[in-house]
Length: 185
Image (cartoon, rainbow, N blue to C red):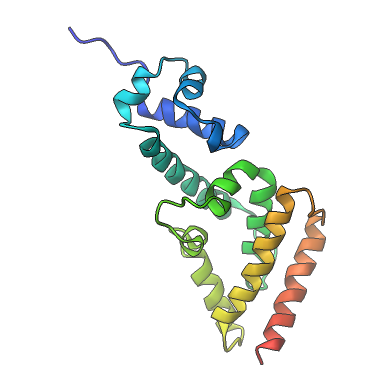
């Protein structure tokens, strides 16, 4: 009679997610993960052929987590890109290690920054379409300008150099949108 498996793939993945969110993925090793999951390394390597394979599954879980975070983020503004920017910056503030894993680390498992931000819900495309509907003749160019600002602000929050309050961030995003819109003619 075969032994009952008590450690599941989801148990391992959830432990890895917790470690990655607290310490960063670079600290997730087979041994530290086994200790966190309450098992030996054997169940990890029974489920995953190597840590890279686990890393890919973890990355997909973090992508889904960001997507849910964005979807559930309160919409506070009608100006295109403001809600997207605010949620992105807040995600960096609330989840710095996961933000680094998704948007800073070089290994994005074949996904571009745009793919990650656009997600399965088409967040960027929706915002570009909103900008076009509001009269922007070059909404893709406007997005690129806004994205540089938004991503820069989010990265600054990782180092503690971004200390604007939410209302100040909203004002910054609105003013930038208007200035970039004007610059595009």
